[in-house]
Structures are given as C-alpha cells and as structure tokens.
Length: 71
Image (cartoon, rainbow, N blue to C red; front, side, top):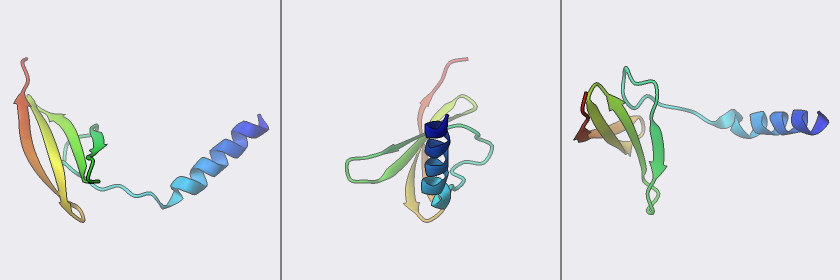
C-alpha cells in the first residue's frame, strides 16, 4: 500500500505543471500523436468526419478532414 501512495504522489508532482488546450470545441475525446520531427497532431471524430489537426502555434490548431465515416 505504501508503494502505491508513493507512486500516486510522485505522479501528481510530475504532472503538476502539465497543461491542456482546446483543439476542437464540442469534442471531448481525441488521440494525440507526435511526429518524428516533434510536431503534435490530434485526431478526433466530429459528426461523421474524422479530423486530424496540426498544431501551428500556441493554442492554434489547423484541422483537416481525413475521412468521412459511414453511419
């Protein structure tokens, strides 16, 4: 039990400085990936569209529809 508590405390301390930003309004779930040249991308579904957004600057993302999904 003690090692579990230590792991939780360390996890909270390490992630304490983490932050998040909104990529797409109305989307609650997405997948983050980082390319070989360290550029972040986020994939998410909105309606029938599968969208991939590339980060272009602080709090700025450029979305591009990758595919239309069937109903």
